[in-house]
Each structure stands twice: as C-alpha cells, then as structure tokens.
Image 1: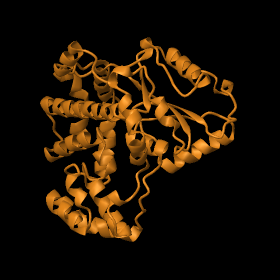
Image 2 (image 1 turned 120 degrees about the horizontal axis):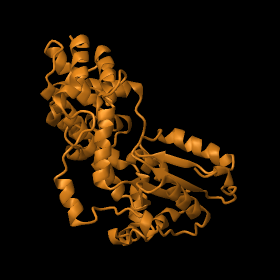
Image 3 (image 1 turned 120 degrees about the vertical axis):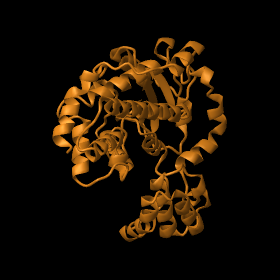
Length: 354
C-alpha cells in the first residue's frame, strides 16, 4: 500500500475522492458522508471501498429525496401486507399498492416485497408515489446524457471521469471498478462457497443459529441473503427428515449456493457496466501495480484519465472463445469432490439437527 500521508493536502474547494470498488457492502449513506467529511477536515484523502451499487450511487449523486415513514406507518403497512406475503399472494398485494396511488408498482420484480412495502409507506407518508420525488442520479444522468452516450464500450481508454466534473456533485470523484476475468471470478466464487462450509463456525452453524432463534428462510433481509437462505432451507429440510441428509442433497445445496452467488456477481457486473463513472481495472494484476497507477492518476489528475492497456479490463466479454467457455462453465470443487468429502458435515447434521 502506498503511504496516504504522501498525498497532497486538500487546498481546493472541491475534493477528489479515490474510489476502489470491490463486490462488498458500503455503510449507509449518512454514515459514509459523515466519515468522508471528517477525513477531509483532517486534510486526508477518503478512499471509499464498497460494492453495493445503489448505496454507492447514493454516495456519489445524493440520496433520493423521499420521506421517511413513521414507526406507526411502518407498522400499518406491515399489517396490510403481512398476510398477503405469507400466502405468497403477490398479485393482490401489487393491486393494493396500485390502488393506493402507485401505478408503477405493477412493474416491480415479482416478490420484491421490500420495494412494495416501501412504496406503500411513501404513499401513506406523503400522499404521493415514489416516482414523484427527485432522484439525484436520474437528474444528473439526464443532464449528461450526451456525454454518457459518447463513452462507448470500445473506448474504455477514454474517460468516464469527465462525467464527474458536474458542479452539482458534492465532491470530485475518481472511481475505479476492479474486476477479474469472468471465468476466474466464477472459480473464485465457487471456491469461496466451499470455504464457507469448512470449520465449526461456517455458514451452516450460522444458519442453525438463525433457525434456532425462530427465523424462517427468506423471511427478512438476513435470511434472504445469499448463502444464508440456501443453508437455512437445507437445514430445515434436514430437520424435517429427522436430522438426516443424503450426499446428493448436500451437493444440491452446495450447487444452489454457488449458482446463486455467481448470478449475484453477474448482476453486479451488469450494474457497474452501466455506470459510466467507473474506470474498469484488471484485478488479476499485481496489487502494487494497480495502487501505483491510482496514486499516479490522483497526482496527475487534470479532468481526464487514460487507463494503460495492461491494466484495462473490458466491460464486456472480450471474445467469442471466452463467451463459449462461460456458456459451458461447470463448477470444479476443491474440497467437496467425492461423496466421502462431505461425511463430516452429514455427521454434524445427524447430531445437531434432529
């Protein structure tokens, strides 16, 4: 890592922020902005590392200007939708919200109960649907639509950084998205899922604790999380069968866990592919090389940026061969290959899940 103290003191009214983006979570908007202000006030350079696209978008462009619902309204909305959600009656719930005043609710992804509840909360709090409120990102995108259109997929070397120079933004951002080649990424994800099943404190132990507290799979944010939902569903099925699991059932669980994780990564790639503000860097390159480039880019910043060829990562699948390999991709595990490789987990299940 380079010495951050070597970066120049902040003397400009508008500050540059170096942004390294991995597929991880970012603290909520207000906390992140507060931390940023504190760092700038101390004459340092904030380096924001995160990956949840919507929160990152809020951090850069500002949070949507929608009202917060009172505890009373939140409780009222939960009561109205709880029974419909329990019965999986999505269509009726959507019509309820449409009639309340949000016709766009019918275009929500099926079973996106969080956004449906939030829509109803906003209507009850303000009398208006979510679409009536300003979304800073949308406003900025409309104003710079021509500039965004010029940042073509074939010109990764050109600068999406120019999009950040709008006087409407609170800071001047330098944004980077670090990504590996898709095949390498998928392999890494599959291995990571395996690693999460190893040891006494793996994800199955955490799923057991969630079930023991009375929670059910897919019932709240925590139990909807990738990995936890699949693990809870698997253990719940084991409990229903007297604490028993076959080898085939374990491998089915692992397959679904890995598949859901890869699909989530794919969705994140799609999200950031459409965010022109990010420069894509090849995360497979040596860390020191990447950091040296970013440090130099910060010192030499003049409103545009050229990423050298050896560090540039294409936003899209670069050739037909890679596309074919992705279509034929099959998981090759490291730890769980044969039936006996999961025997210790099946023994643990038989002892703890009766």
